[in-house]
Length: 196
Image 1 (cartoon, rainbow, N blue to C red):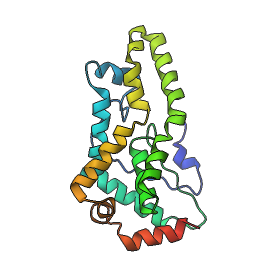
Image 2 (tube, rainbow, N blue to C red):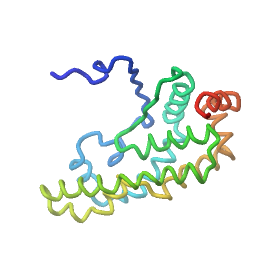
Image 3 (cartoon, one colour):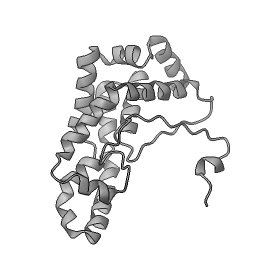
């Protein structure tokens, strides 16, 4: 059996911060993509993924994951690097990037634009997945919109997450401070660490 890649990477520390405690079909890919897509028949996948953003930012599991993520960023060894990812890199990890950018003082419009830049890379992957699936299951070709909903970043996904935060906390800074225990002092320390 091939060893766990984390065991082969000297000097690398691996953290697992689950944002969602449930399998979100089509988002976390708990089984395989073909099985997930069969489960999606008749489901509004776009609406389901949009709801994941609200849950990721407001549910206790998500807030604990993002608190831990910010702590790792703050405590990372000087001169080192921090890499974060999830299955596709746009939902849970995309929100982590938004949170990190906002904690660093990046303007909301710029954080939103960075999130949407995911689509520069996601579309090709979505097309490949659809082509592979349709080769084995031709009726799945009709799921093009659902595939896009799973693999691509949409403005309304981002907006749903931010609207949920603003409704619950009033401002993103209050969210950082109250939900993620990352107030002005920690934000200043993060900026000192990462901004030139």
